[in-house]
Length: 115
Ligand code: AMP
Ligand code: ZN
Image 1: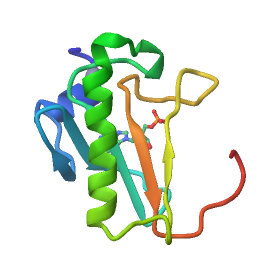
Image 2: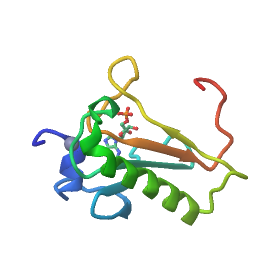
Image 3: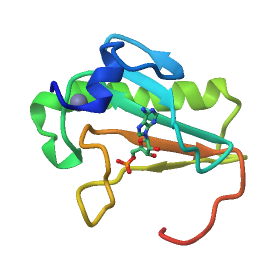
Image 4: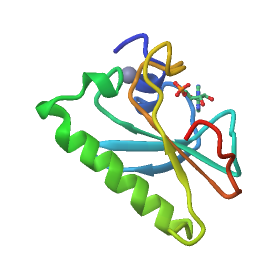
């Protein structure tokens, strides 16, 4: 998608702080971190949101989830210290970048509001 900021980051046209990359997934540090660890995981293929997923995107989503767990473990995260994964979708979900991504938040005791 030519006007998608995350597609431009994936293409290397906009700089980012890369944490992880494989053939299907890119993970970058959020530019406006909301926790000591705040990483965005996205499929390299453009898909607008979680509501754009179907049977043709299953491998991309599985790769994103596997990458989240790998990076989290590499950072020393576990069920003992914990983490939070957030996906925002559409206007009511406060999604600001319309390229599917999951936030990994960790490194502090997160608030109990909003699940
Ligand atoms: P969302 O509101 O769920 O769509 O999340 C979009 C996230 O992307 C926000 O947390 C932004 O801080 C982050 N963001 C926007 N532009 C960039 C960028 N160029 N590099 C890294 N993170 C970004
Ligand atoms: Zn995109």
